[in-house]
Image (cartoon, rainbow, N blue to C red):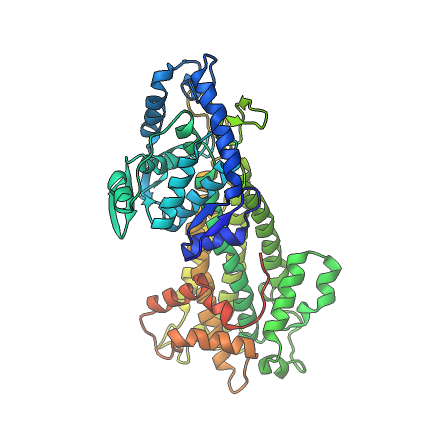
Length: 509
């Protein structure tokens, strides 16, 4: 597989998504080497000198005032990594670990961290050969760097800890050996450079963004399907309505829905003589809600693209050779971005759930049978599938509570304000899974509803979406064990196949 060439400061979200989704290797552009080598030389001179330089010849955090002898600097870095391997909980998903490693390459590649090129080469080699450190996913507060998870990554690089290779979990040393790689002995500041930084939080936030964008695109498809299923009006999609407000996401959402519904016989059948004046908000206000979520996701994307390209460890080697302590490791921007993504996911799911509720309710669904079953009473149809979406919607509302506002002092009050970006970003995995299930149920219900409108047909793009869903999930006649159907539909949302099946251009990130 072709490697992604990362240019520090200029790497795109599209490149990072390919690394995460496709497992593409990654390496720094050769132009980054000169800056990395120059910064390493400054660190080497500082380590040989007598002046105290934080992270080079001092202790860490609250212990920064303690000077370390030159002969003990290697032990200092090793002890730093081992002492910080305090992660707990389930292991990170390998794809997100690889993304985190690629982000660390970008940070080191800015030439401000002071590591030798050997550190960069080892990370590149691990990505190329499939050595993936085993990293517990809990333990970071998103300030002073994502210390614990990044320490587990660094431990594997030194031959400690664990790593997955060729389908097996091995010691870090054995995994590297089997891949033909050698563990590194950390030099001055190199351990600190590896564990300081926001790469854990940023990797999870990016993963949440990538899946969240796919869900937003699919929500445009499922909402169009629901509109036809309940014989809703397309008048609220008129271009001038949305241009009069001016929000880009809303304008694009309405345009995409117009394209998706274009040519629907169902829609044409009730343009005249329909006694309903207005549809409920979950139908009429779809562009306003999903479009607003699209705008929010794009704002978060811009923040994360900047952060992905940033130098975020401490201290930093400036271009004039000064080694200066700062606070770029504080993940406040990532925390805000993660909270923005969480709110967008919750709202996309909330309005989708109301469309599901609309379709199963015979009072509101415009002559669809109760719970979308041809034999209501004897069969319950999608009754409890709708309840499941309500449960998932509620869970996402709770998970969407802002995390960045929840600081607590750590490290003997030296690190007295933290971002909590780590778990703010990590919760997006769960929220996306919930949203994928909600949209999957909506697709099932809408497809069932469209079927009841026969012989009238939906639009050609939505016919293709219906055909894609029916390839894996047959129409619901009599009640059956539904859990596999819900899982199959959620997967079509997660992998993007339902949206792609329409062959209709959808908003891009």
